[in-house]
View: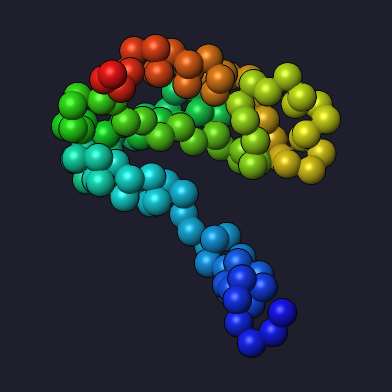
Length: 114
């Protein structure tokens, strides 16, 4: 296909990759927090050697919004059982937090109205 269409979209181009990889994830998360009605500046704290959190207060419906940062972390899911196989190509994985358990706990506490 030539002359336009999905094959010539920015998803296929170098510009998309450069844009995506140049974003600072903490800044993107801060924008999300503001969109959820939170205070624009979060409280950053070091939880352990590897883990930093930024917690935003005043969010809509009193839903807590916390950004977890893994120092020197790769593109990984913390505490994944496949860590040994993934570390080689996705980077450092921490076991100081468990993303699955933490996510499940959040969703158990904050359900959508039915």
